[in-house]
Length: 293
Length: 307
Figure 1 (cartoon, rainbow over the protein chains, first blue to last red):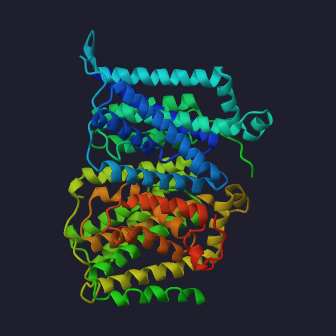
Figure 2: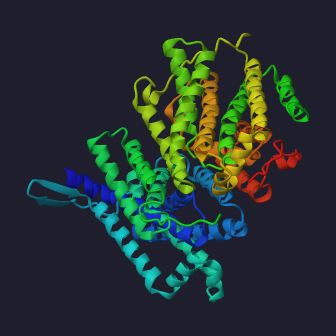
Figure 3: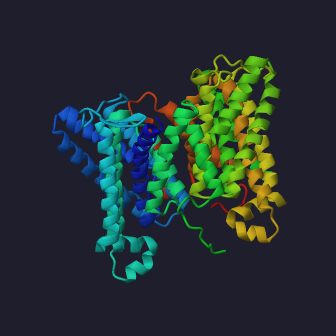
């Protein structure tokens, strides 16, 4: 029973973790906290729905079209909306992404309406059943898919950032844009790439969660809130931090939901997270910074 | 004295519409949201704290007042004051973490609070669960019969009183201390400003104003349920402050008018309102960073730097 809940928590948490990852990558390179992130992914889920259910394309093809669209949205938002106003205050930047959220929500309502649209699971086979002394664990195939895809994305991303030249250049821009420019790094390109990655991760998260939540304009609200919380819990600037943050929130949420109260699941989980932040204000893996006066 | 003259248009505006109670009830709503948005303004523009959970204070005020009036038959005026007081206490408790965390971390803490309150309200019996509370009576202290015109002037009077108090505070030592804390916490502390006191005061007064607005909202609408107090409301309150003009009661009023009035203006057309709200929000930030108030060229009423 406990193991079953922990496994379920890891799977929910892995979704929180990649949303947090997408937020953190965009934040580290361009310094923008993207409040519209989930809604950008939501549009991709609708693109998938249109391709697959309305046009009748192949599942895998629609999947990749939707991801490509997500990366395009990421690129377009950074290049067209945020780049021209890089120098305004962070608070105004947050409000701009909030405005973007409203626009995306409205666009989705206008085009696809307010109905809940269904997307089928990619894998519908028999669930994986693990037996061991004292209990069994049941994992549906779609959840295994989620876990596998998320793990693959995280590994690919870490390898990309640490081993490739481009990934190192991106980390350099994240650390110090001016000096990175002096070293001949095309920081403008790196910012675009970071948002392309972030956008496609957002689309991927939306597509993975869509069979459970259905597709509707607010489908990503919960995932976005929890992804944001996971990023903050992990320290906001650290990639391992967001993974740990996401998975621990998933586990906390599932255990609280089972053993304390189903109705107040989110309340208790958030209370635990706030308690952690009060004890450790810079997050689990964040570092306290000396600030200039 | 001159700054009080800016209120004259707001006194005159509803008179031509005296025969249209529906329009007047929208004006009442605008006034109520103005009070809540002033609460947000005090917290963000004056004290430099971020909050995306202020809808919770609104809910606390609305539910306190509704429960007292419906279940315990308390006169509205007393319920109104109690709801402000209760929100004040909760605001101070929520302000405590702000002493440790700041920035995005504070945003998450306040957001968590907002979501938690919404969920808690939905669970308990006394708050009516997810169905909410219906048939909240119109306050009896509104001596004349409960016409929207009369409600409007009551709300406007409350805003006027808040305006007088706030402009007094902004020139006082406490006001200056708040602004100093906003601009640099370290510098403020080195001048002997007690950050604990001022942060809690900022959260407390923001919560109290929002709670009072919630109390008025409950009786003006007559029906409340948890879904009315979601994250969107918190973000809308923040957006009202930015759209109108941060740091000024007039600006906040314009922002509230924009956010509350626009949906009604456009309700006849087949276009979703959020596209327009979002686009206007973005355009205002790009071209009028000080808010719509810039168009009217009204001087900053508090004569304070707006960040």
